[in-house]
Length: 349
Image (tube, rainbow, N blue to C red; front, side, top):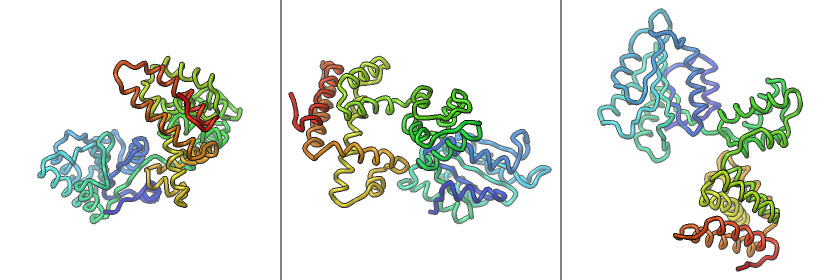
């Protein structure tokens, strides 16, 4: 099974697209964007004869027939199949899908796109069969996951320049850390920032004032205040999170993840393993900045402080799951304990 990534797809469709393209992965924006780019080179969406789109509830025979028909007053037909649930279809339908992939003629381009249907390319035997059939037929099976931090930073800084603004790389990185790595969201936020800043430089302060933040980023601010040993700011931030009606368990788990990141970096360092190794082992691909941040935070800790902090977080987790306990009091007490451990190197009841 041969799976390629965005760069290979980009090079391929720079020429004339041909054959079959299977698009899967985390990033819905990229999957739709590349499907549209391929379609644009083949047929106009208003061309009812040469542009055909099918959804997951279709009859595969209709898709097969559309691909096999000779294009009308054109060189090729564009056929797209979106979100076909190959994992749960009948065996005859799965066989028909494989047959379709291997028999698409030179007069058609077929794009099979998985958007809401999740694909496990490593564990799914059916997907491996589909990808193998596509590889044998000369098609491309493309994994379109979220872009990595450097690529996203360049996208944002270049995008700001095209809009007549200037965005500092540090501001771009901060936007990604707080708004997430979804390209569609980032583009929307960039439009807002450029409209607000005009020809002025977009800084981290601009992003802080204008952009929305993910729940994770909002809770991360609480972690930041705890690590800075700022009790009043931490408790005020907790007030805001409760006002936003964020679930106490989400608050706890997000704060805990900061300490888990540090523990993984600490353990890896003890074994002589770098950040790249931790990223590969624990699924931080494209999110290496989280580990870099953990390495910086870890400078405030020794093993005892880290161990005591993890114990406090575990106890808070048990308390939140116990019936009748006041979640707000538990989290307030946790904040005090974590700050005390960091400041004094010992626990407090």
